[in-house]
Amino acid sequence: MSIPADYHMHTPLCRHATGEPTELAAQAVKLGLPEIGFSDHSPMARDDFDDWRMKAAELDQYVAKVEKARRNHPNLLIKLAMEVDYLPGHEAWIHDLAQRHPWDYFIGSVHYVSETWALDSPSQISKWKNRDPFEVWTAYFDRLTMAAESGLFDVIGHADLCKRFCFYPKQDCTSLYTHFLDAVESHDIAIELNTGGLRKDCKEIYPSPQIVHLAAERRIPITFGSDAHAPGEVGMNLTEAVELARSTGYTHYCQFTKRKRSEVILPR
Ligand SMILES: [Zn+2]
Ligand SMILES: [Zn+2]
Picture 1: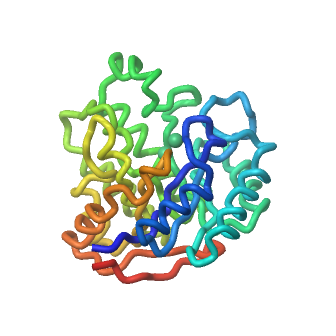
Picture 2: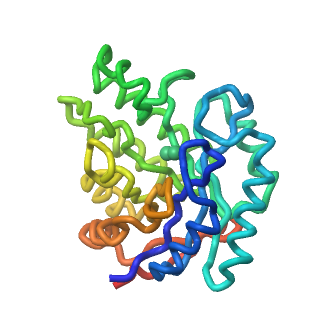
């Protein structure tokens, strides 16, 4: 099976990835990908917010690196995007970022369930041990729903990142998922199938088959992303994600150009 567009890839500017954009693009060409999109971790209004993203002053450098990859690989479609952290209160900053460059899309991701706790951070895993998983998952999906309703994003990233370390609630979470997906549907945005989860403790694509099924019922558009933090991860497991999409009834995925969405047939 051929590989779909990989819309979730990082660069060394975020301080925890290797491989320049042009190197990731070279790998994509080698694998025969039709299209890729760089979606590095967006800067925050305060550079000292955390230590796993580019600084605000590096934004132009980021765009220049993506442009260089485009020049070096003229036959590969390369999109300019960011994975933007959604936190309540950061909306004006995100709106400002959107004005600065001709972005193709913004992935809205929730990593932070409070101002200081990124729930997927290995250095903060001890916080899970003092909390009820259902309470954390509820806080996570509440924020994800707010992200979908914000109008700031084209795609919602890794929609059940809260499963990363396998702190699963005992309760049924279906109503958290449907509340979130109803917001995605009514705001006419997409979700991504992110294979990064397969490389984590949860060993499962984000989001789960249950959520992909619920999304398919609502005809919510999808993108695919490897969440590559190194050239060797480009396109990784995306054919599995395509199979998951197909098994739930999807026939198409989507691409973005200057924040306009269009449909592409799933690869065979
Ligand atoms: Zn990262
Ligand atoms: Zn992320």
